[in-house]
Length: 133
Image (tube, helix red, strand yellow):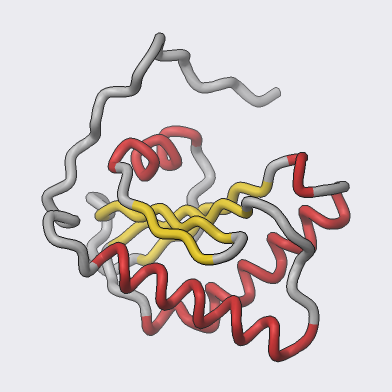
């Protein structure tokens, strides 16, 4: 399953539980809706590159997530943010991304107080989510 609505992304970001490795940052939050589901959201900014590069990143990340989904802790939502760099190429790089996702998820979920994390108020004016047309 995927996170698609801005409210779903906001739920994960507001918990502020994250870990990073290289060019990937993984945010995690307990999924309140379905305790068996593991859901993924992707954020690849325009500063990463052209649409071709961004879509290549997203395809690689979705495939890596698909292969490690069964090994991730159930009942959590994850958002992966790409900070920089070229998308991984080749089988070895794909395995490196898979192990990074698995390691980051384990690191965030195993932190003390993770399951009890509550949304922290945002600093500054709260802007409503943008509506897509």
